[in-house]
Length: 287
Image 1 (cartoon, rainbow, N blue to C red):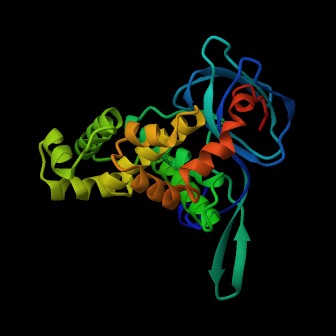
Image 2 (cartoon, helix red, strand yellow):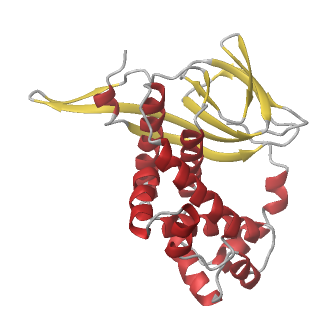
Image 3 (cartoon, one colour):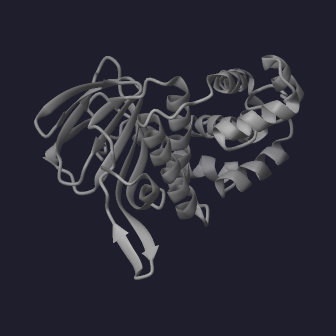
């Protein structure tokens, strides 16, 4: 059994965090892992062997291996696996009259579990993406953001496994707005347009969107734009073209916002990553 209240104080130590798009040759060779490992498959298919048990995995599968587990894996060559992965250690500190004590209760996760709730999966993908992007950023407080995001991930998974009741009417509206933003982020979008799309008031949309995602619709839209902007810059698209393609009419405003979001200007991001793009495509680093 695990103590859900104690788990809320979880303090992780990260070894590695990655958003991996597997190459055909990607594999994890058989061996005992050192740190705990949590992976979320968001596309493609693969095969895992954990402590002698075989698993076929695909989109929506969450894979958890404890420190010391014997593991191997490879991707399907027909449907290359895309996955977020975290290597980490953790403890759960608790304060009492006797002072601080640290516990390491087992995480209540199966080796492989399918996230069969669309809202939970969408939210997890968003959280894992935030975690992976923050980990490689130059933000001064990136470790604090990573720890908070990781706690949100663990809490959401535990809520889902515990049968927590989500308000699907709200979720459906929020997901519809997210889908609309994802398909139209190049355009000038306003709260009025978004609320009209789902037939509710601006204030109610703002309220339920914050409740479900933890942020505002506009901030979420900007996250979509920044994620797409980084992808375009990595593909060699110029800063001015990138700005236009992600919905910024003023390239100077785009540059200032990108700097605030990522910690460096888009020109620096472009120059930093352009020389690495080719090698990244064929990287087969193992976690």
